[in-house]
Length: 286
Image 1: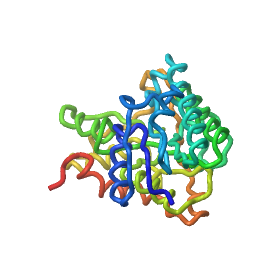
Image 2 (image 1 turned 60 degrees about the vertical axis):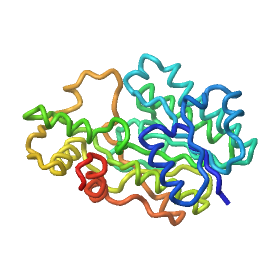
Image 3 (image 1 turned 180 degrees about the horizontal axis):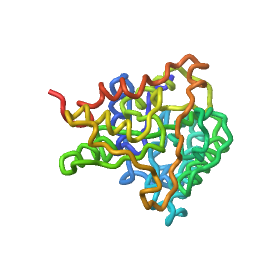
């Protein structure tokens, strides 16, 4: 049913792995990025988006600190763009898969956020992504909104690569303990997206994160173990020690109840997945 795919934002960390996974599934996939399409321009979208069964929107303004100063720019990419894509998908009869974020929640909870939880966006980035979700739900009936968080992968900048680099030059590294979430490999998220579409699940919101939870400090220690460094070089600190323009959710754990309800297996435990991912992500494999 869904044979022809279009990935918008294909040059990003998730986009790379998603295009590979779609192709590996035997589907036709067209990969475009900002050089080929401007999702904030209806004419550009109309010219590029056509003749496909599925459109996956991976494009986003993800610089959370910069969004505090450039909220209008972030809104154009994170909200106006999804609206335009949703309208176009509806007009051509394509299913829209839209990638969203844990930042649509404020992070005040101490229990995993359900898919239907009331949105309490965190900062300008969260507000613009929440608006994007609203736009998708409003302007098309055939959609999957997939929220994710704490992504890492082989391509682009990610937390593991940063930690690996710091470990070469620092005797100790301060990493926060009061931000809790689910480290998620882009390969796993790409696989989940394809499985969701293959299963023809109902339109709705799904959470695409690893199972289990940890804090940034715990993830950093796991990274040190993966590169043969003493994990005790990772020292405890709190978010208050860093002067950052944008607020961060203190608790970003997302529930996977809707996945289970439609018979789709969630991504496995974050630590088990990291141990498989680390040689690929960090380039330490044979």
